[in-house]
Image 1 (cartoon, rainbow, N blue to C red):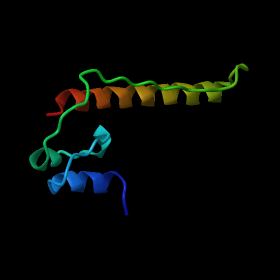
Image 2 (cartoon, one colour; image 1 turned 135 degrees about the vertical axis):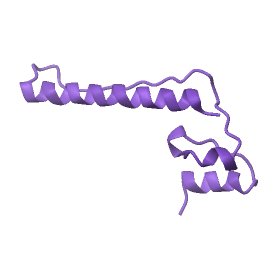
Image 3 (cartoon, helix red, strand yellow; image 1 turned 90 degrees about the horizontal axis):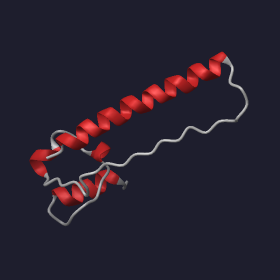
Amino acid sequence: MGGWPIAKEYARQGLGVAVLPIACLSPDDATDLTIRRLSDELVMEDFLIHRADSLTRSQRDVKEALQRAVEHHERDTRRLWKNLV
Protein backbone atom coordinates (compact mmCIF):
# COMPACT_ATOMS: atom_id res chain seq x y z
CA MET A 1 0.00 0.00 0.00
CA GLY A 2 1.30 3.46 -0.76
CA GLY A 3 0.19 6.86 -1.81
CA TRP A 4 -0.76 9.86 0.28
CA PRO A 5 -1.38 7.96 3.54
CA ILE A 6 2.17 6.57 3.47
CA ALA A 7 3.66 10.01 2.78
CA LYS A 8 1.66 11.46 5.67
CA GLU A 9 2.75 8.68 8.03
CA TYR A 10 6.37 9.16 6.94
CA ALA A 11 6.14 12.80 8.06
CA ARG A 12 4.24 11.86 11.23
CA GLN A 13 7.10 9.55 12.26
CA GLY A 14 9.59 12.41 11.82
CA LEU A 15 11.38 10.77 8.92
CA GLY A 16 11.05 13.74 6.59
CA VAL A 17 8.55 16.01 4.93
CA ALA A 18 5.55 15.25 2.75
CA VAL A 19 3.79 17.49 0.25
CA LEU A 20 0.14 16.52 0.23
CA PRO A 21 -3.14 17.85 -1.15
CA ILE A 22 -5.18 19.53 1.54
CA ALA A 23 -7.92 16.95 0.99
CA CYS A 24 -5.60 14.31 2.50
CA LEU A 25 -5.44 16.10 5.84
CA SER A 26 -7.79 15.51 8.73
CA PRO A 27 -8.48 17.81 11.69
CA ASP A 28 -6.39 15.51 13.92
CA ASP A 29 -3.33 15.98 11.71
CA ALA A 30 -2.77 19.48 13.12
CA THR A 31 -1.82 17.93 16.48
CA ASP A 32 0.72 15.49 15.02
CA LEU A 33 2.15 17.43 12.09
CA THR A 34 3.53 20.86 11.34
CA ILE A 35 1.40 22.02 8.44
CA ARG A 36 2.46 24.80 6.11
CA ARG A 37 0.91 25.98 2.87
CA LEU A 38 3.17 26.18 -0.14
CA SER A 39 1.55 29.40 -1.26
CA ASP A 40 -0.81 32.00 0.10
CA GLU A 41 -2.77 31.98 -3.14
CA LEU A 42 -4.86 28.96 -3.99
CA VAL A 43 -5.37 28.61 -7.72
CA MET A 44 -8.06 26.28 -9.00
CA GLU A 45 -9.27 25.77 -12.53
CA ASP A 46 -12.22 23.64 -13.47
CA PHE A 47 -13.24 22.83 -17.02
CA LEU A 48 -16.48 21.42 -18.30
CA ILE A 49 -16.10 20.25 -21.87
CA HIS A 50 -19.11 19.46 -24.01
CA ARG A 51 -20.13 19.60 -27.63
CA ALA A 52 -21.03 22.98 -29.07
CA ASP A 53 -24.45 21.65 -30.12
CA SER A 54 -27.52 23.04 -28.44
CA LEU A 55 -28.10 21.34 -25.13
CA THR A 56 -31.37 19.68 -24.26
CA ARG A 57 -33.11 20.75 -21.07
CA SER A 58 -31.81 17.65 -19.27
CA GLN A 59 -28.27 18.32 -20.45
CA ARG A 60 -28.51 21.94 -19.29
CA ASP A 61 -29.77 20.73 -15.90
CA VAL A 62 -26.79 18.39 -15.56
CA LYS A 63 -24.39 21.14 -16.65
CA GLU A 64 -25.87 23.57 -14.09
CA ALA A 65 -25.73 20.93 -11.34
CA LEU A 66 -22.06 20.27 -12.13
CA GLN A 67 -21.31 24.00 -12.06
CA ARG A 68 -23.00 24.35 -8.65
CA ALA A 69 -21.09 21.35 -7.32
CA VAL A 70 -17.80 22.88 -8.48
CA GLU A 71 -18.69 26.23 -6.88
CA HIS A 72 -19.50 24.53 -3.56
CA HIS A 73 -16.33 22.43 -3.70
CA GLU A 74 -14.20 25.49 -4.47
CA ARG A 75 -15.81 27.47 -1.64
CA ASP A 76 -15.25 24.65 0.85
CA THR A 77 -11.66 24.10 -0.30
CA ARG A 78 -10.86 27.82 -0.01
CA ARG A 79 -12.33 27.86 3.50
CA LEU A 80 -10.16 24.88 4.50
CA TRP A 81 -7.12 26.47 2.86
CA LYS A 82 -7.69 29.76 4.68
CA ASN A 83 -8.11 28.05 8.06
CA LEU A 84 -5.11 25.75 7.66
CA VAL A 85 -2.64 26.25 10.49
